[in-house]
Length: 130
Image 1 (cartoon, helix red, strand yellow):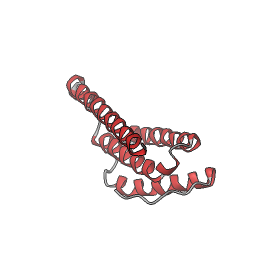
Image 2 (tube, rainbow, N blue to C red):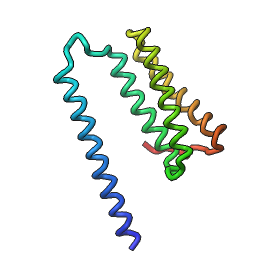
Image 3 (spheres, rainbow, N blue to C red):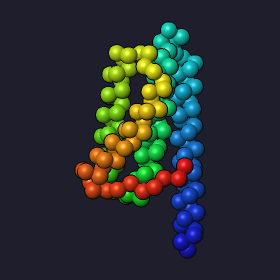
């Protein structure tokens, strides 16, 4: 019985991932077709989006064992908002932000977010296998 439930959840999750991926590809494709060349953001914005996606994929995996806790997700959402707003302000003032600096900043942010979650919610991250 439990294997049927597990396989149903896996199938549902896989279908959801496919839908999310198709929406993301459609959004990026639409932007690529309709965005005038002069309005294309700088390379730093692209690197920021990729670094943010990696950061929150990794953080999500670190706290997946607490996925049923709304407090963890609310705190992570708040951290995401601060991350996006902070970098948006930074990149608007520094459009030629060095790409390699993200390689240093993202691991520092992972450690900072883990510290914030530990101090606020007393929740430790689990080890992550990529």
